Length: 147
Ligand SMILES: Nc1ncnc2c1ncn2[C@@H]1O[C@H](COP(=O)(O)OP(=O)(O)OP(=O)(O)O)[C@@H](O)[C@H]1O
Ligand SMILES: [Mg+2]
Image (cartoon, rainbow, N blue to C red; front, side, top):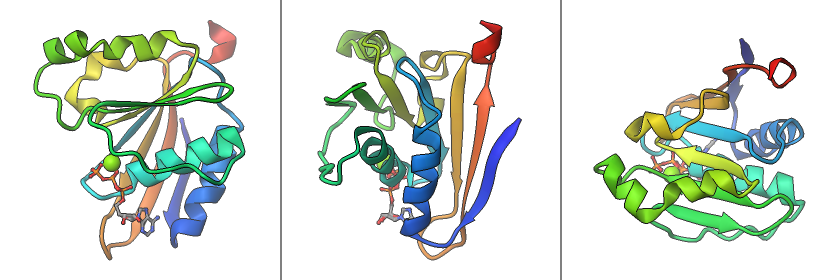
């Protein structure tokens, strides 16, 4: 089921949609962020952290695979772009991020599809640079009520 499919006029729209989605998330939820290079995945992840933690001072840490934003609940931000091999991810202990009662945001989920649980929120971005941008949000897998 497509929950949201919108044209993004600019960065302001991101904050609004992030707030809407943040309100529907619970600890343990996983959000898969897909879309081409530069389509806005990290920008959206930071907007979600802002909305979830109710702060405006979310920094932009450079991290390779994982950054934990402490808060209630914590947010785990995982970026699988540079992942060559799931074995590497296991060595790095990335799966721990799923066991912290955190909300887990995953960029480039297609690099390691098995990392993403069946039940997750799929957020897809279209467009980069000056191209028109769109966001599409779908809830995947069993609904919470059906668990
Ligand atoms: N809705 C938007 N409107 C206009 N510019 C945007 C929007 N979303 C993101 N941008 C800009 O696009 C650029 C790339 O954004 P971002 O780093 O979030 O993309 P990304 O999908 O995470 O890229 P990567 O694939 O490299 O991880 C940034 O300069 C950001 O400010
Ligand atoms: Mg990114």
